[in-house]
Length: 161
Image (tube, rainbow, N blue to C red; front, side, top):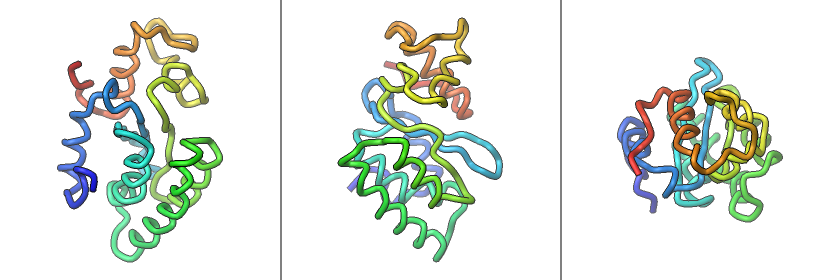
């Protein structure tokens, strides 16, 4: 059982905001398709990410009742591959198709893939740094990257190391 199970969304968000990406190194950024707002969370590994994505994200984005149960079940079936294959683009596309019209996964993966700009979204985030960074981002600038991600997601700031 994960520590966020059974909690209300506000309590989950508060708990997840305390997680340090340098310790919880598997990340997720979702975007609400109605508002355009981004949300981030960090996990102990792929298993926690998959369960969170299926169980929490639909609720965060306003899916309730039977619609929630259907989306959760479809996402759980699809995300079973996450533990084996990892967070690859084809799996992200499949998840995004199931999450319509509520949200999409903008980025997911290890902190290192964000630093290395391994996809379009992470390269765009690197471009927001001042000065803009070309991949791979030097480790000494990781704090800047985390802060930029938190600003994008409307979070006050990254947890202290």
